[in-house]
Image 1: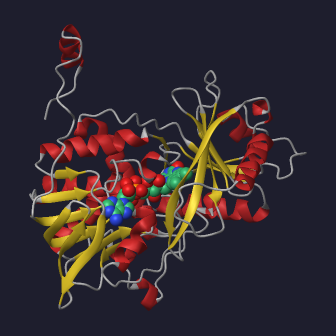
Image 2: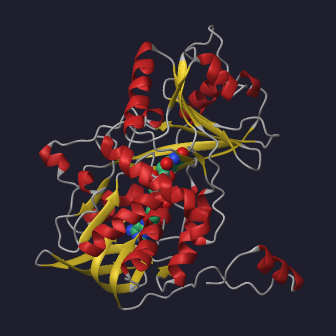
Image 3: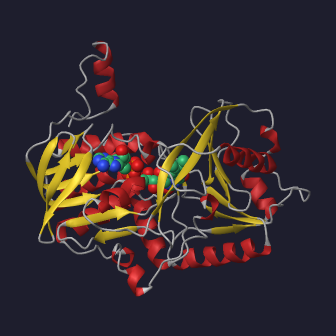
Length: 416
Ligand SMILES: Cc1cc2nc3c(=O)[nH]c(=O)nc-3n(C[C@H](O)[C@H](O)[C@H](O)COP(=O)(O)OP(=O)(O)OC[C@H]3O[C@@H](n4cnc5c(N)ncnc54)[C@H](O)[C@@H]3O)c2cc1C
């Protein structure tokens, strides 16, 4: 891999930056791979990277119907945190957060991780109880978590409106100082570059149109670039997971919804933390370019259209202004939508599917960006060993039969 460093940058500057090699090859698909991954988002690319790096499996292809990272990986609001309620979730999201903390160095790619702190606001007695409960549960799991009274929240985020005359006054907040944001598409590019360097083929503009199996065993996939045989097939297609799994005759308990976000015009630095509010329904941070990056709740209907409806944007704006009246004259720049796959308990599904050699990493819904390295890491282990990684074990599909659900609707409440 061509290493990036200050010296390399200075050296290439002398030749007008014309001597850089592409960060990954434009691979053409081979007739057969040991493992085929469907979906070139952060999760699929991270899985390929860890398969090669940790398990020595390099005969891997990542098949992406468009260009890598243009799915939810490049559409999300980039919030990273691990303050989930239940032990199972806290462990897997904290595993991811720990990987994030060393990932730029490991991939030799600046992911612009900024651990600026994430505030989750409380606006009712129930929110306060839930916030305290979550802080205590997080601490028991070794996760940094604090409860802030309104004045302390205001000290942490001076432009926050804690006035008592707001529709839903701020009554306190949880704070995870190690939470923050990262540059979303850099995550796809960084994993793609590192996986490619290990010999993984990243095949773009290659849509999987069918999954072939015989006698309950996977044979391979059919794509817009021809048939590809595979020993194992791993699905990591986010909003399209249920569509892709249906190609193998598997029905998943997932619903696909639009989730939208928008950015404002860029302004000087004014907001140096992440603020989330489940009650008024907005989450906001400021990008390095100066734009406010805001996310909404999911649209109530099912869709694959990658755009959302206007009334959600209106609600999002009202929520923003309630928390930050200072933004009342800010103009909005653009909005977009992604399609998220939501499971009934708002937790992911990671593991084997009922066709031998077929695996799924999905159901991350509105909150899977923060999990990207952790999900890829445990999914790679699950595929390589044909049994779930201990952190992934509670998230198997069979929990919908056994009833051992992991209800994280409250942790994900802001976007539900
Ligand atoms: C507006 C918005 C805001 C969000 N905010 C946050 C946030 O702040 N924090 C957070 O943690 N999470 C957030 N999320 C959720 C997060 O973005 C996702 O959970 C995560 O990015 C999923 O990653 P992925 O790699 O699985 O999916 P994707 O990046 O969507 O990758 C899946 C890929 O599969 C490809 N694909 C689909 N079908 C096929 C096929 N048949 N053949 C080949 N390829 C196929 C798609 O083109 C896509 O590139 C947000 C999501 C949205 C939409």
